Length: 128
Image (cartoon, rainbow, N blue to C red):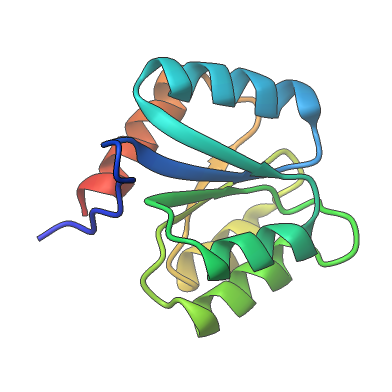
């Protein structure tokens, strides 16, 4: 049975933790049109607090974050909410970082990606 944390109004909830406003805007517009409620955080500390305090169907996480980096956010999120679906979206992720993300149970998608790729990955995560 899949994890379903949709909001009371029926929307699935996505948290985007990324410093690039343009990417966040495009993701929010795309996912909003697909019936997702999108929340955003521009740094690791804020993103971690939001991810732990609230329920999301999936967290989209960049690794290159100010303050608390994305890998640290992922590790802390795993200890606080082990089953939380996470998709790492990063242009700076090298092979080792992607392997580390996979070992922590996150899916990795390299920037640049297409919105259809991202939607497919998120849908797969939400169906789990």
